[in-house]
Image 1 (cartoon, each protein chain N blue to C red):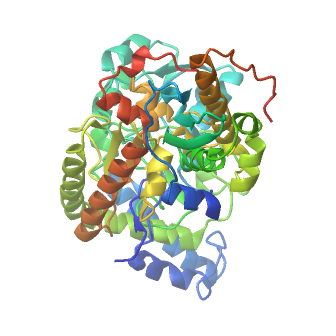
Image 2 (cartoon, rainbow over the protein chains, first blue to last red):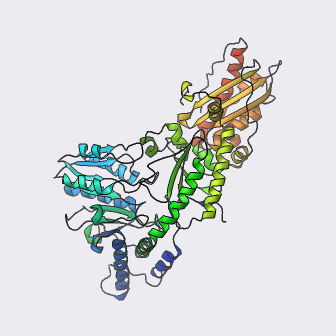
Image 3 (tube, each protein chain N blue to C red):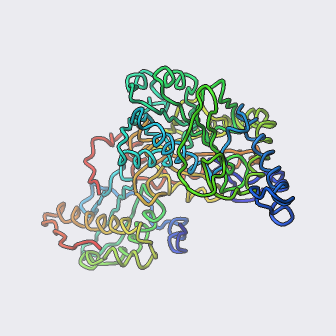
Length: 403
Length: 137
């Protein structure tokens, strides 16, 4: 077994070798610019891009003309939010999203607020799911867009997108979803789900970094976004810039593999995830974060009370995982997603996210269980809070000096 | 962020982990930090009749740098007089462990824990606590 074991697949995934193989010819031999209409080099590149567009479209039940290639999900989120606001601001200036969204959505919304948008940030229920009644209450005739992510990157909960889309549409608003963590992992269908705009990224589904796509609905209704980058008018005028042909070929292949292997991957990974979670839940004072029914098959987020996440990760050096602890970010603030669930700061500080992937083996999961168990036990021996808990001291009764 | 070898050494082999009898008059206990902030240090000293620290123990809830800072502090405290212990500066810890700027607060916490332990010992023995006038770096 190679160490450390990679269990951070929500951050990025290794490329599938089959994806790399598909990409390789497009660096040296087939290097053409897909916008070169007058020679064979361009035609070969264009053909490859068209094929990839079909592969992407097929995975999400879209038409290939509805796929706009971008540099990744962050750009797709920005293009969707800013592009829709610019295009539809005469109609209304209200956008609804959630506090648990990715920063690409939240910060784009913050930007739009400066330009006159009114943004409602809904707080999730304690299990991470949207409160649909609150969504309905927030909707108004001014609402032009509802942007709610499909599956959450930190806790893995899957939002009821169909219901959200219905509510948005009943008020004449568009529905956008950041589906970066969901596409290729669980079935996503833009028609059945009622999605008008969808952001996805290649590197979260075993494709290369630096490439993604935005789905923009073409009929019922025809959605338009104002380009955020000016130039040669590529991608039906919505996203200028010479296409990243090898990257796009890789994204296409990753989508095709996702479509063909999603089901078997999901069955295998959810079984491994459950094994991991059940074993670690045996540890005293450990808590699984987020709804455990509606969630991605490969994500587990667990808080181990009385140990701190970064210290814990250091003790688990054979594992590559993530923590909601403040210490892993420059901000010294614990995860805003976990805090929005109503988790106390100390539980947010004590969380570990395990992100399994296509290449995770059972042997690795077994090892991860053992390493985590030992690390938690070891750090609790070092923890004054654990000692106090064991002595029956109520930690809330102590006046802590916040620093 | 990569950790320095010294942080890793103290983290992997923490010195002086444990608990002293906090009801004893010879023992001073400092409990600083807050669970909400992600670090809590408890540092204890046992002082002999010559005002020399003959034992020191710690337990810390926190990141690797916080654990290493308190482990190092206990190592430094043993054998020092109370007066010398008061002089331990957080920047000495930063230097010794090569802590990056984002981790300086861990060293501050360790210094606070030392002072809190000493003051607890002083108060228990009828002495006034020493007010720290130092402005942290």
